[in-house]
Image (cartoon, rainbow, N blue to C red; front, side, top):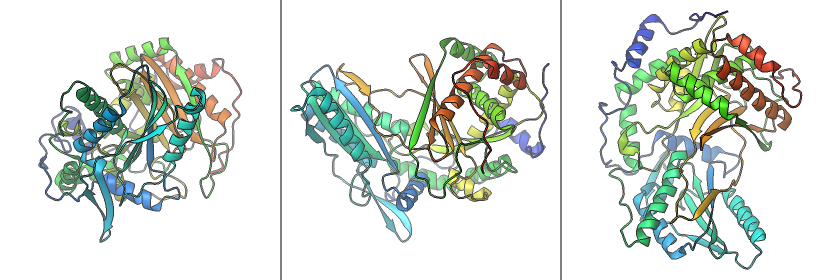
Length: 497
């Protein structure tokens, strides 16, 4: 039977819903877009830092692990001669193109300030050609892991280290270790794109690509002006209303009590979504007028409701933060965190739940520019030891980033280091080559590997049923998913929290 949904207690008031409706139809002004009063300009004060940089700096200063903000990217390059001298020149060209790669950071009168150096990035070279190929690869990978575990001195050193490991003739491992104060995921993809482009240009006698019209410090100046303006104040109002009365966390059951001091190992469970299920989900998205992200997010809400019994759920998710086209080719830490809250009552069909998810996501992403720490400051949620504020579950859907391209040589990414998530469970769905995989990252402080493997498998089974029966009620879908055969047996556990 078709379920019904109603506005739950704590829903936004009618006047604010009208404002959201205007926003969804594009009739109300949003945050810092092309009509914003905070215009893009070359910033006179080149020492300013962005809200994200200030947050990362504070985390760097307070972290028990001084390398906790390191981000590593390792690629295996083979099938042709890689000119190391040209690669070094290309790396220098990329560092000239992006000031953020030459920036140092110091605390001045209680604030973090940056200074841009004229130094170019050096290329480290390690020759392992005297070792057997298998030994050389393992030695290089171990060296990359060791480098990733070394802290940056942000006041003295550039926020990136680059090393080429020569394994044998025509075969290298290229390792870039970044500090998060300088990059996010899209910026790392930009780094490899620009390095490849500079290498190709130098190989053909052309000049490498010039710097973009603006740099990240110009974004920092623009953001700081925007944060002092009326658009930011309006977004604060939105998030206060949107998260008013939200539960403090998703009460998902874990295997172990939460430790006072985190110290567990990181784990990862990966399950592929069947191709026919992905085809059905894409068709559902098209018919419902939603993005693939919205459809998968709605399915995840249904999954969490199945696991917890909650129908007021908040999950964290990233937003790219590049609100204006001027920043598309700029490296830096633009990514922001937003809290996505969905509420419903009754027993809706999945298609009805998807419609609610679509409207909620559109409203939330219309207010994505306000830095997450500003939201936390505005809401002042009750802090709990060992917990992330506002949400404890992370959800993301990504397209596989473009890989380096060195004159047609074969390249493949090599995993370097897995870190446990800062939340109870981090779910990432990756689309690549027409396939979809689900990754559930966890820490052994809270979970056993077998439990997370079973959770991941159950989520994929739920996706299969949703693809086949989107007009069934959620409770019926979960019953069907539960009856599907699966490996292992999942035991119910008492929630120790």
